[in-house]
Length: 206
Image (cartoon, rainbow, N blue to C red; front, side, top):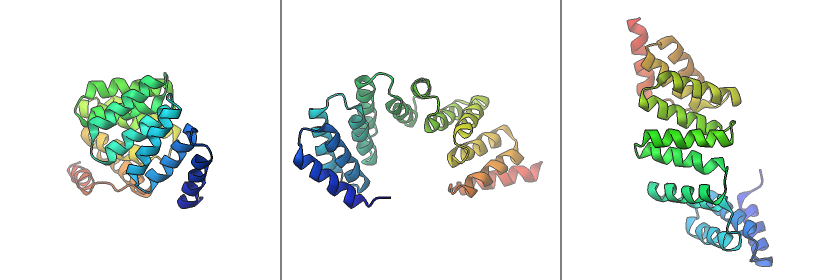
């Protein structure tokens, strides 16, 4: 992978050569975000939008900076702007769903996530977030179906296995819960210690 400093230097040069290229400002901002240099990244995202007003990805990135700074409402608003800026763009709808779920609006989250999936039926993260929303609503079979869909697209997506462990524990199926728990760990996911304890406690009762 190319060094991030080389990437930043390349796009600094690009914006110096052509300061009206929105994509160059955007790409420079992405590099700066990777180094958590958020203030300068925001400057370039604003310049990207001044030169390319329909660059919806820039609004998504601003939303990401808001989230990194603990501003959930800001993240939600900028992703809503991104969704309005480009019809059929799935990523902001996935982010909107995540934000709404964090705010406790489960119905709104499900609507947004289903819209994200309608625009991209291979949107793995949207399926796993949707599974979490269904789980919070008590819709366990729907949560399982969403996780299984995510795994059919990306079998090594560890968070889907973690979610399935939670769901099967809730359903009282300790054996299946343990299988998904172990799979999540094999894939590098840090499974909550309490989840493992609860699964093992249920197995002892069976």
